[in-house]
Image (cartoon, rainbow, N blue to C red; front, top):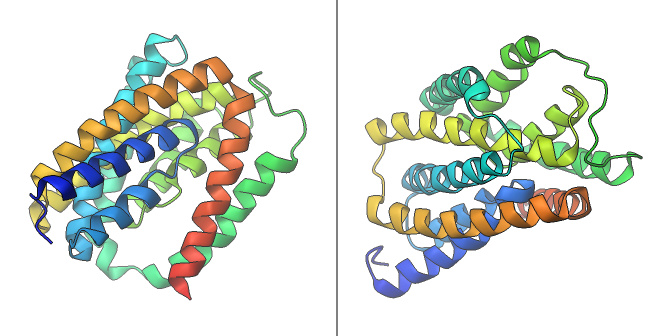
Length: 252
């Protein structure tokens, strides 16, 4: 297929819009966008690079939307965002040397665990709770660990950040969602910077998809601010289970 064909670009933009909407609320948009790029005929590494390019627009747009709504202070997240970018770049550099197949097999189990956590844990709402890790400890452990994984593979990173903010930092669901986006954007930037050097990227397709991501992210972030935990919790459960089933299907 020709990635510059107007019909292909229109379909990729639509896929990115839907991915941006879902990702801005519950994470997991990459499992819509990445298969769409592959179906358009991109080789695997090109698809990964293009997915990072288009994804950074959606996460950046969602982060700005949550900041305007007063849900997150982006300046306070500058340090963790830099850590995320560097860790994701390192993950992208060493991706070919890691046992990616073993990680892919473990991912469905982790995603099902995430879904069960949010489905069964009582009292999850938009209220903050006691934190188990302070900001420095969280920024030195969970942030680089998840960003490194995002550079290597990526599916479910937003959901994993969410559970980290809820379970370790004690954030309510809306606040956790808002704080996830800048870190996700930073890890996309870090991985994209490396992929731009070592892989071919579909720049035009990625930018067109980026426009779709911005639209979807704006719609999703505004819906999340209005709906709060009532919208975020069920969508997070459904998205995590859908990602797990998709990965199991791919593995089988």
